[in-house]
Image (cartoon, rainbow, N blue to C red):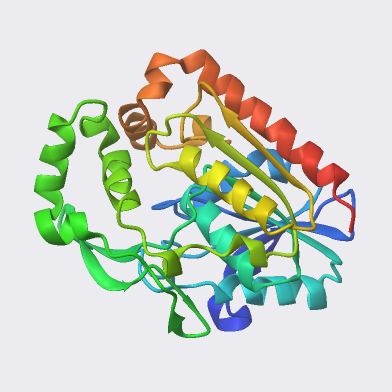
Length: 304
């Protein structure tokens, strides 16, 4: 493997050379609060697949922003350039889970050299960034992402400004269908009512084959709403590339690999904040395994 650093390359990543399809490479990014070790665990099936894999950090990793605010999409642009120039890669795919799926969509909407995109449990709007304050979070009144040094348009997190984190939690706890275990979904469903059109990720600007994966009644954010919406937008735009999507009837937001290698604290949080994991454990695991097969099949069929 080979390490790329912010100082030397302009981005933080680890490159795992493969043994098949030498002209293809897959950039993998992970979800919110995932450090480098967890990001590496989460794409285990990709690292074992035989493809060239670049595990890319966009925040939390050592040397990167610790808060989810003003994260440069430029990291992906520099990673793509490095793969092309240093590794002579001709076909670049990108995949991410949760927050990483949104980052993947943003990257592909700006970088035409990303030719295959696989967002797993994605969301399609840029929210305001947040900063941690003690054990709570507050809105930063800045975008979650930047492109070439400029904030991208975003939708404010009014629920934090109006109510604060404690009131948000208490309101979710008392609202039927949510509760504390689904407080994140409650917040995003509230934001769905106030989304600004300019904050939408312009998926129609991508130049890539796309495979969307989501779960019905996602416990964390509305991936089950976002995926049909994006598919509809692409269809109406006469999008000229291949588009596939699948929404699992029974599955959880944690649609990734390496859970068995994660810290015990992560597993506890996962079980608590994903009721589907305790209600449908067998189906959640089957959805995970099926998603890996679908992703590898899609990449295998992708023509560069």
